[in-house]
Image (cartoon, protein in one colour):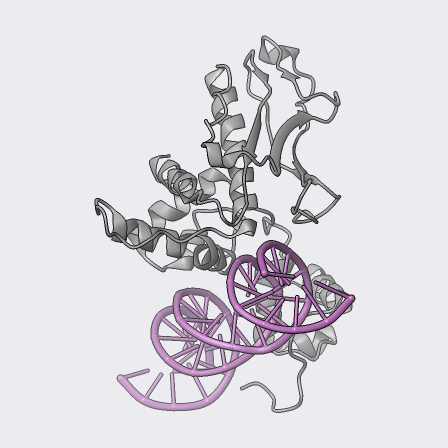
Length: 263
DNA sequence: AACCGTTCCAACCGCAAACGG
DNA sequence: CCCGTTTGCGGTTGGAACGGT
C-alpha cells in the first residue's frame, strides 16, 4: 500500500530527476515502493518507476521513429495486437509508452481507415488528413529511408516524387547534408578502407512559412544516427512537401504506410 | 494579438500478473 | 493454496504546444 500522505504528482522537476537518477546509479533498483523515501522523493514508487523506465533510463531512445521502426511496429501490431510491451521488446530503446503514444497519435487512424477503404470504390469514406507534426516526423523517416536505401544499394538516389500541380508551394524542405563538409553532396569513398570516419549526416529543416521551432535541439537541425556503408554514391536530394491545409496530400501518407508495411 | 480547436506526450489510474511468506 | 504486497501493463487524461482564423 502506498502511504496516504500528500505525495507529489504531475511533471517531474529537474531536481527530482537528478535525485532519482543518482539514487539508482548508486544503489540500483531494489524496491520501487520503498525507494522514493530513501531517495528523498515525495513520489509514489509507481511514479518513480514510470519516470525511470520511460524517460530517465540511459538506454531510452528519443526522437522520431525511423522507417524501420515504423515497419516493425506495424507488423508486430498486426500479429500481436496491443501488446505494447512485447512490441517494445523488439524495438531497442523504445518504451511501451512511447510505442503506445506513437501508435495512437500517428498510426491508429491511418491503419483503421486504410483497412476500411481497402478495395473500396467510390463512396468510400474520406481519408483522414495527417497532422503537420506527423508530416514533419514522417518526412524525416522518408529521408532516413532514402539514405539507407541509397547507400546500401550503392545506386543513385531515386528522383524526387513527382508533385501534383497543387503542390506548388514549396514550404517544407528536407535536405540531407554532410555538415563536416558543409556541402549538400556527400561523396562516399570507393572502398571501406578509405573511411576514417563517417560523414555526419543531419536532416535540415527549413521553414520559410510555417514550420517554426524544430522538434528539439538546435534550431533547424535534426540529427540522425548514421553509419556510412561502403559504397560509391552521391547523395543529393531534396524532398518538398506542401503542408497547406487545403491540399489533399493524404495519398502520399498512404504511400508511406504501404512503404512501411512493405519493408 | 487574441482566441479557439487540435495535436501530442508525460504521467496518471485501475487492474492483472507475479512474487513470496 | 491463500493472501498481502509489489511490479508491470494498457487505457486514459491533463495540459502545454501548436496551427489556423
